[in-house]
Amino acid sequence: MHTTAIMTIRPVRADDVTDILALAAKTGSGLTTLPADETLLKARIDRSLRTWRGSADKAEQGYLFVLEDSVQQRVVGVSAIEVAVGLQEPWYNFRVGTLVHASRALNVYNAVPTLYLSNDHTGQSELCTLFLDPDYRQGTNGQLLIKARLMFMAAFRQRFGRRVVAEMRGFSDDAGYSPFWANLGQRFFSIDFAHADHLSISGNKAFIAELMPKHPLYVDLLAAEARDVIGVVHPQTEPAKATLESEGLRYQGYIDIFDGGPTLEAEIDDIRTLRESRVISVASVSSASVKDDETLPWLLLANDDYNDYRVVVAKARVSEAGAELEPRIAQALNLNCGQSARMATLFAREKTV
Image (cartoon, rainbow, N blue to C red; front, side):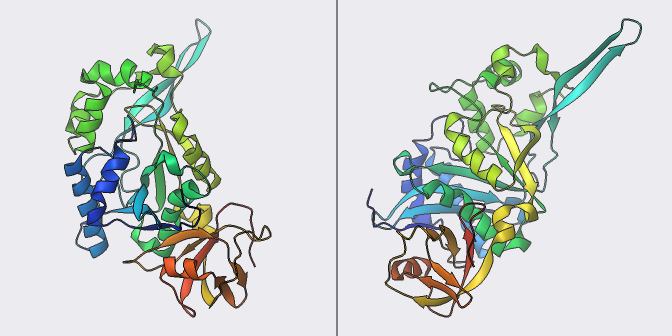
């Protein structure tokens, strides 16, 4: 790692496919939206490019962002937004519910947890496809990768739904074994976890509706190892879950049908970064370094340029007149004095003027 690198979020480009393919090879099992398959990745990139060009129907619109190391000139992370899930093909999950079995004569009252196949999130916007190269999991890189999407949604609020969801990667071990899938999904589909993942990300989701039972599934009939991971995230996903929870997203009782990972959700206008971000003027570009000034908060700074979008994390002096940016930060954002930038504190509870 080079300490002088500027880590910048930008829209994906067609020539990023090689770097993204290398990232996908590092994800392990369970990250279904980033397959190590060049054909599928090219299709995903093309769909994103058509979304930015305005030539994609709402049902297929999705934005794919990359995190680029300015020194290495290499993509080291990805994150994405789906505009409206479930409009083109069903978007399934399980709703964790309760059935009551009671007998007054026997003085028995049992509240039994159940799983219902659901399409309740149809039409909502989704935060997805989050992955950061393990070599870059330090500093503010993870926070930037997650929250840059929220800055984009704040700038272009009209393009997204009223509610936002985020499916968290469920628990699996180092060998890729998913206790939830092994004790539930595999019983109905008779295929392994990796094969089911591949079918799902390839757009072949009809098998879910065809094979998954429509009646409630009793959680207590699952093996203990499966019950114990309902709503539990993969260890590598814990930081992302904590970050989204700090933004106001919460688990509301929906889980992934493959690995049992929790779905977090919130009203879009209640999300902290969207609610608190504001547009300021670039008052000056100064060579005076501020990165070591402990009195200044870390900021998310974005240029709000739809087609050439940029977000960085940096410190900046902010006054009523606007922000004073270092030259390398202004350059990374493609901003000059007098232009506007969007600003939000990187962490909750920090303040600017």
